[in-house]
Length: 240
Image 1 (cartoon, rainbow, N blue to C red):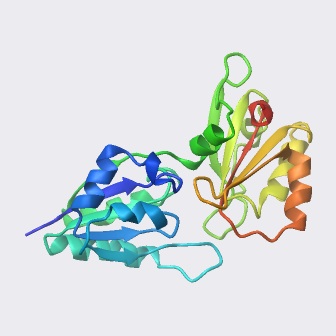
Image 2 (tube, rainbow, N blue to C red; image 1 turned 60 degrees about the horizontal axis):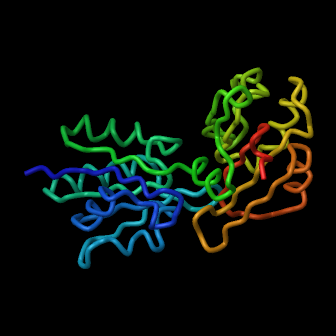
Image 3 (cartoon, one colour; image 1 turned 90 degrees about the horizontal axis):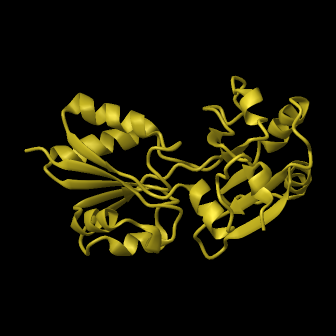
């Protein structure tokens, strides 16, 4: 007997941003494996009696190994259970989804992927800014500010990231942003380019900081805030 795995995207943390399908899967699950950022009020939709398993991974903190998470998915599904893998934001955006899919494919376990609101879209919405605008912001690009070692990736497309006609959403980039900003400015991007720091979007401690690339570098140098954040930069990031 083999179970089924639903990869459920929890969005940024506000349970009202869950899709109807996500709520239905949470309510029917036998087991829910959830990330740290996909917890809190979102878990209120899980049925009473379901097994809740924390498998969160946070930079700089003790975290579950990816191999262990993938093994748990396979083992629980092998018992015939209905399993939800609850991921923050959208499961397919910087969520290591492919590694868990590989494990299920190798074990012959069926699954589905339920999309959700990613952090960049949520940050733009709460800040009342569009991600695109005809003629001035023709492209949106999502990029990670950290590679597997936690450092700024050295193979990024710097010309694209400094494109004045794009809006860039930087994930996991608070620590490496000063180095990234220096590269952007070297590529010709103005240090006065608007930037938005959106921390803990959808949570009670949400914080939005509108500044510039240079201003954000200075601010991050003075802070030791561990809250998760997405950084938006480009002309539209400064829209009021």
